[in-house]
Image (cartoon, rainbow, N blue to C red; front, side, top):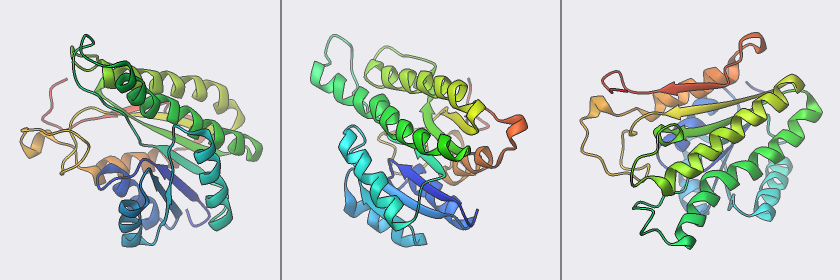
Length: 231
């Protein structure tokens, strides 16, 4: 891992921070990106990562991010898209602008970030691209259209890229986080007991092992959930 350069887009105090911590622990150079620079700088300082501001829904912002990371650290060999967009409510009540913003963050941003990663990795013949999914990637509930549509789309993107780029040496995988994540983050308030919540450091371990998989047994998708969660 000492020669790996890991870029994580969509970093907050929960899973994003844990992902950076796990790869940094393994000796990788880690770049953390979020829409706002100050919070991600605080997280990056914990384990010596580099921090960047990026709006993943804007192509120029993503291109600028890659240029900055390549200048400071080198070309990313592992890219994780961990951002998402969410608007709660019935389809009858969601405004077009709200729906579009959630879809842009949940799916369009993943496309732009992963496309740029893929373009670079295919040239080298190696690399890993990982997407963060959710229960909503495979189940759409009554008031979840403003979240699930983006997550369904991101999953479709991941499988298309896995089939396209896998034969070219690039491992693409989608992680379904099937449940709430422990901690005051993730954008969801929950009254579930702790044993029904996923620990972000434990989820990050799964991402790390996905990257470490031998190419003879690459996984295209994996789902994680608490031992007590029904599914």
